[in-house]
Image (cartoon, rainbow, N blue to C red; front, side):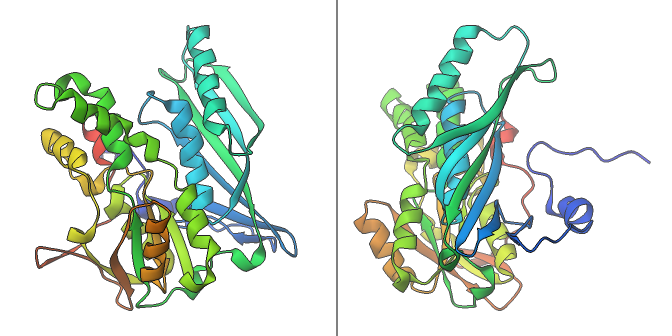
Length: 335
């Protein structure tokens, strides 16, 4: 029998269930949140009101602005847990004969991306190895939160609203605008491509996390940053994390013209495109959350709600469709 080969991107939910979650895990009392589908962070109780939040992420889809992305993608996971970041541990793997000047630039970019955020470099590892043919950065983030502010999925219920910040496909649009600039320039003008490339400046979701965590009247239940697999992938994951179904109006999902044009050029689905910079939030008072976010200058919209059904449904132009498990990001079709 021919062995099945894995596709590029996140390993499927089915395989994670079979080989990781079903295999069991030693249960420690201090671990409030361990590995689970849709969970990007662990929560460890160090003292009665002192919770440490941990997350780890590699950057594998691009070398462009890799230091900037490595910092912010990891911080976004901490933000989705409602934590305040403390510091980062950074592993950098370099291919043979990598220029010293390029390493200096990369590390400078890392430091600049951390500046102004009161973040410490806690440690790491830097190595040249023939195990890679381009730069790989993996970052572990450490944050903290008080016990009363830990977001507990068990509090989620049917009728809670799903709020989305910013726009679908943000990071993927920026990556494509930079990596495929020559091809895109045949049909799209320079100003348009510059706006698309600069969308990575919106990649941090720390601002929206802080807004959402600041007002108890919002009754925030969960947050999930939208990364590989795009909006549809994130909806699948947050539904699984909540143990609820969902119904989403795809026409309410915010999307920029830059994303529409670039994904049409490459025949990609923008709702399955990596979207770091966007956050899904589950809240009882979605209207207040949206108002607070917009007042803070952060675009946001209610796109749907959770249901008691196990179905994950999107509606577009009156047609209901089931959301399917993520099968890799659209970006990998052309990168």
